[in-house]
Structure formats: structure tokens, C-alpha cells
Image (cartoon, rainbow, N blue to C red; front, side, top):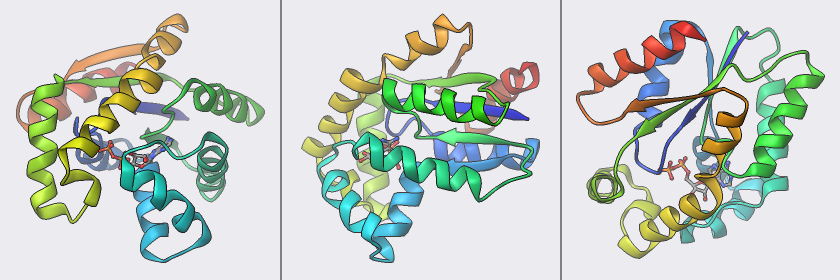
Length: 190
Ligand code: ADP
């Protein structure tokens, strides 16, 4: 199996790139943000819980997110591998993911990070908010809060994967195709 954590700050382009790369490598793409939004739309219990955090740009609690992620992986027994998009976002999530995969005799092959500066990202997110219908993309203070969450809780994961010798950075600025090619060069090695 090839299990890849696609990493990067909010708006870095993880969803766009994951959609292209999952086809190329026949992997299952799990976006925790998409799963939460699906649950919100369908007014499930999980959706109602997640909504109050997401609307503010706060992270959903670890336990809820970890259980949801495990269920998504278990739905896809027999997969060739996974692209994790938006997970892990905290060190406890990363530890839980390693333990969960180890139980299955699997591991993370690498964290591949899209590197983009914060100012460019805020502009991108506000632009996306005009058409995406995502309430968390229309209000600059909520966007800033998502970066705050990212910088205080998520950015440390670079060190976590680097310590395992599993961190690969890629320049996230350029055309969609150029960025896909940069990421594919890394995926090929993993
Ligand atoms: P973006 O990368 O643009 O922030 P996502 O769709 O990945 O968008 O995530 C949107 C929101 O969903 C986050 O701000 C957070 O509230 C919630 N969320 C997604 N993944 C996680 C996670 N792994 N842990 C906690 N909350 C999460």
C-alpha cells in the first residue's frame, strides 16, 4: 500500500491536487473536511457536532475526528492505499494514525507538504469563498483563526514526520499542472 499524508495550510490546494493524484495512483482520497461537510449537509449527529467548530474555524475535537477517520479507512478494505487530506491536524491525530495503521501491518509512506505563504493563502481563500458556498471562507477573521489553529496545532507535524525521515516539501505556487507534477515526483519515490 501507498499511504500518503497530503499536508499544507488552509487553501494550499490539497483537495485539488488529491483529486488529480488519486486517479494517477489509484488511491482512495479521504478529506476530513469533505466528510464533515457531507455530514453537516445531511444533518447527521456528527455533522451537528462538527458544525459549531468548523463555522468558527476551530478544529473539531480529536476523538471525534479520529473515530471518523478510522471508519472511513475501514470502509475501504482492499484499497491500494490512501491520500489523507486534512488529517492528521494535531500530534495526537498523527500518533493515533500511526497506531491504527500499524495494527493493520501498514504505515505512512510519507508526508508530502504543499508550501505556500500565508498572505497568498488568505487571498485565495477569500476568492474561493465567493463561489464555494463555504461559510468558513467568507470571513477574514475566521480565516485568520484557521491559520492560528494551523500554526499552533498543525504545523508541528512537520517535525513529527521529519523525525521519522518521512517529510517531503513541494512548492505549492504555480499552475495546477506544474504542482501536480512536482507532487508526482515525490509520490513516485514513496
Ligand atoms: P481547509 O484546508 O481549507 O482549512 P478543510 O476542508 O480541510 O479546509 O477543513 C475545514 C474545517 O474542517 C477545519 O477548519 C476544521 O474545523 C475541520 N477539520 C477538518 N479536518 C480536521 C481534523 N483533522 N481535525 C480537526 N478538525 C478538522
